[in-house]
Length: 276
Length: 196
Image (cartoon, each protein chain N blue to C red):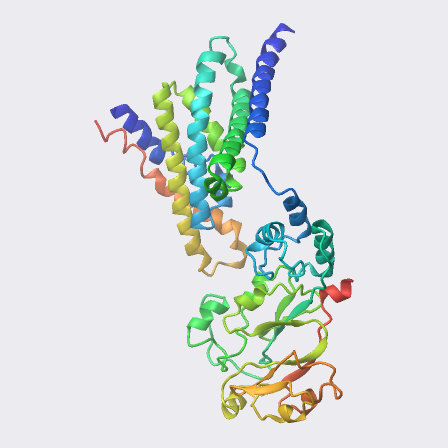
């Protein structure tokens, strides 16, 4: 018994002393923190994707606490759910989040285009891009090595038939893939049913035609049929101005008129819409 | 003086905590992916090793040994080191927030790092004086730093290589760690004869 006590008592005493010192230190040297910060931070999904424009979720939470003018609807992956929670915690009015999904502006899969070289190097798009602009015959197209799929936090991107495909049902719209793509083929669009130009080739029509049967040749047919004037061919590729592309009386006329079929109707009902 | 230099150099090279004694393997594999996080972790380890030795050596010498409580060494050391790290964290957060932020999550992680406990216990086992113990801790920390920085270099090379699928990730990292630790075998016997 005595042996146990001589062992236990010193350890307990040391423990109590340590605890007392820690308690005193944490009281004396407490750092003042905005008490809303942990609550605000908890609302955010913690993906640290940077879609809000701040350095990660911590940065956004800090900005929300310190500056009451910071909009609460910047978290795209969190969507309306997070915006609602944020407006509750901060006591401001709820603002709707424009949910977005990523789309790949390239249709150069094995069916439409060919590789010009057999690339054996480091298996990332960035490395392949350095070597004569990639292995595909179109230097603007998807390199197909999956840098975007690697950064996707939701595994919403798969590489099929040599190009990246985004599954909008899983896409949370964080935009990490868009930042990663060395050819800047991925952009974020609002997640409603709409038309998408699946080509980014700035080559002249004849060149595009030669390397890829699915590419935009810049024929301007879509420009003419669009009732809202939302499509413009710039740098030999059709670009849709989504500000104007809505309430279309003749929906997807552009897609039907497209000679190469590079304008596609995408049901972009994304992750958020399916979930909520 | 010569003895101190021998202790320092042998702690860094011959008895390197990671590569020869195989202590602190967890951070060695976990945070050696990037050079900056490896450096941050190592600096935190050096700091904590010095603080822990400064706290545990007097406790062992003036408290445990005179009272015949040497067998409580491990548990008391763990207790003291954990409390110490927490205290250091509180102090840093208050007075040097920038350092606190750059050490980040590594500081509390080190609380239960076996390299830190190992260095404090080995200091006692080797019968070092206080100064020698501090020098040994510094050397051990520097050795950890060296191993981390070296290995993060090795790993960044590994990133760009085409590794067989079965070896991808941790397996090839372990193989690389084994080869790196082999290189430290070469230092055996060098330091003792340096001043002979």
